Length: 588
Image (tube, rainbow, N blue to C red; front, side):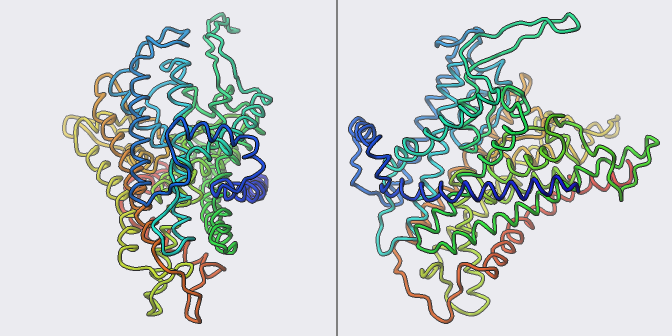
């Protein structure tokens, strides 16, 4: 592993920590209504929004009311997005005269952006008009990110408050997180991206003559504004089909580094918010460290195998033993301006978070590099995770870790002075088990049906006796797709034809269901857990209390995540990337 890559990892986390501290404290003040300076500036706008929407900012909601508001907002905005995509040919800002989006693709895309997944079964520049990119997709980048932050804040309030049913007001939280955090940060961020060369205009596509005499059409548009919230909100949906590998979205190594930092910025900041709100900074720091440990382990594995290269090249007469680093490493599917180090780090960052933006082709990763990306998503993307989703997912794992520690010492488990009961454990178990069932269930359905297998492009040689013989990478493609959908990531092994004119329904329907259930069932479990925690008393710590901070807590939390999360998927991973790795090691 190159010293540059190790230095890049160290610098990356130092910058993330430096950004997370002030941003986390800002989030804490904003969501508590204590950001007095910025409220003097934007307070009138906030009050006008409440008056227009008929919201009483002083009235709080219990967990069922808060959850109902989330579901209502998400459902309505999803319908609006679907309608905008279907009728984009009749709406303005469509200089290329693009047709309305097909019904199943519009459904899949609307669900995708509503759930913060941003799965794209289309080429953005050839399918979506400028109006659709702005009005439907970029707006959902803000909305879905805001919903995730609101759920995380509600769960943090459930931990911090005592003997109450109130968790805040969703509509107030949603307005504040947009007005005081997401929109101002994205304005500054977009200006930085423009300075790096990211496109931001409303010009129509232009045609240019290439050096060999051919013609190339270059699509332009409001890219920087969408790129900012795409990264900061861990959305991942690109303006262009090539996503963050496209030079108009991610032109320089500096823009690439800042985009990676911005993916972790709010998830890392919410660890600080957690510590501030529960009045235990040590707990927030410990959660941050647990996330960092898991993320660094993943980065080391991906960097190691991507820089070693592909041993099958030895079969071509090259002197590349599997025990040495192959010259150049695995550069397939990577941009020269980023190289292996920056691309490997990006792979881990975007799959640790529910972002899904890619600056390289994940389908071209080495088998174990691809395994890390899949496993990151299967863990529920709690290792920093998406904006909000990573935090409330991690709190669920904290509750499970504390519960198991209580069982080991024969005491009633306590989390920050609150005794955990059977209802808490049931909600936490639901949160963990449902995504596993969805990922494995939908993968099995795709592999055992003709219409599901028809979308797999990586198959072994076929003959009359074996009309369909999958390659292990083909299994990995399907597993990656549903892990990405349920984990609300949105990246893909691009060998899977998830949407085609021949079979438009199967993957659009199943991926849409996976994204919807993978988003809102865990949210329901997290909100129920928040409501149950908020009703409890807070007891002072005693001599037998397990401290929710420190090295022992970090080690226990990391172990529980790996045991509970990773072992669930070990058997299916053996048939995919692990078998493929063994085949490459044997130069087959």
